[in-house]
Length: 450
Image (cartoon, rainbow, N blue to C red; front, side, top):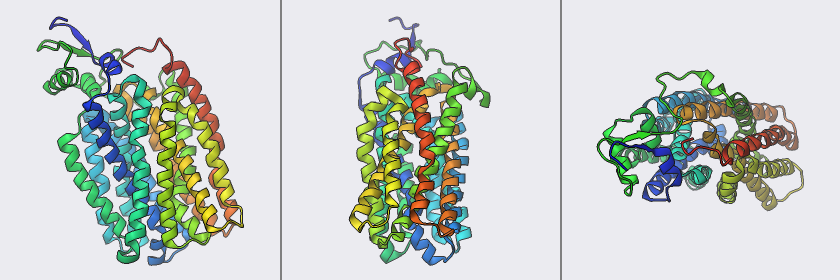
């Protein structure tokens, strides 16, 4: 290869064997998602204690959950744009700081109204971390492992949820409900320093946005030591070019005019059920007769169950895309609906709750594992950001709806039927997205740079 030759970074990445670069990227992204999941879960496990500290109707707690989801919606759009404009690394680090510092500030909340404000600000960072992390993982992975990279990293979400439950079970009886927020805030601040020092920027992003950057040349020589990369080598990414200004209509260009609306609907319906169920899970279990500590431990076990489901789905998502989540969605519906049947003792009730949460987590993260594939690098952060933002609208509506159903004094089985119903539509949409995935991404005609 001559020094003046062009190097297609996409082709090199897609055929590359797994290396230290991939390991570092995945491990750091796992840590991001662990802390993100712990922060998201902190309000859920603390909810019963918060309602005892600030007595109010359960529907008011639904507004606390909803404010966090509205913040996540805004953060998905803001930081998704920042990731496309200024880099995945900057977007991720700022997001981590935006959910860590407000988590620490939550200790100063003196009412549910103040708590709503803190959760909104925290949500900005939580929402921003997801699209940038997904984009970073998707752009680092070889083609055959793109879904697996994201799913493996999102094991951290279930681990974070589990850790929030453990921290709450151990420390809330002694130090009060604020302890879980302090733990998450400190962990996030330390993580941001580690990311600043060690997180590698997406090399695909650098090719599209900073093709003449010395950082790109140094990074390429380190990642591809067997390639002849000289001072005059040009770096390209097939079928990609930089656009200085993002336009929303790009998300509906060509085949995306069908794919984007389906992704938005899938995220909305799935988040209504999954995030609504997760938000109220400890309260639902206490309603069924569990103690605060039993409910917190069950929440933690549910997070660990989500890890097992995701591990079993990782490679299936690489081959079948969203189609792989149809089965997990069906099991999730069945488990949620069965929980409401009266007459269970504590142990089977906890087992059903763990199954419901675990398979809903699998369905949720199957979308996260494949959504980035549908968008090219130049708009990937915005594409993922808008899709996850639609999910946060559902994530705000779900806890609110469940809160009002609770306040209406309806039976627990009725509450859970409301929770599960949107998954019927989600399963149908995932089947349709799976067919699109098979046509576009399992075709031998797919180019290396896509």
